[in-house]
Length: 133
Image 1 (cartoon, rainbow, N blue to C red):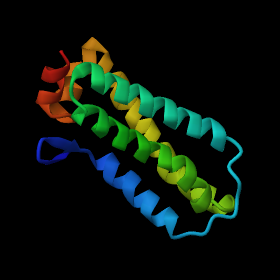
Image 2 (tube, helix red, strand yellow):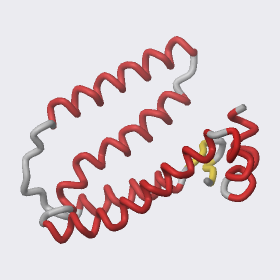
Image 3 (cartoon, rainbow, N blue to C red):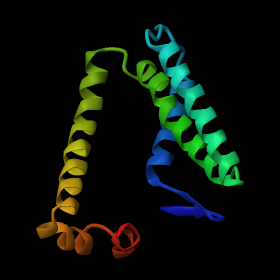
Image 4 (cartoon, rainbow, N blue to C red):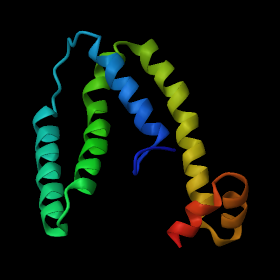
């Protein structure tokens, strides 16, 4: 994790941004059957965050959350451009499945009292667990 001023920028943000940038260079040939639903979710999220910001008296945090959420939602439009055939899907799954298994194992390990300290000591930085507890 790095910071731009007081704003934390996570590695996943860079990966999502590069995926979006790469996908924008590929012409779109498919329709998105759930496009209306995704647009509805984006508008609802936008209004919810702006309303929360007005209630909190600051728009800084909501704008940050909006940007990160829009970056994540952009993957809905990017992935169909990147995955065009079975070979592309297999390549994506070869990278995604090990990542999902590692993430699940770390989530389970950090949630169980018996393994939480070991995962915190050897995998995560200690301040993450201090901030959570």
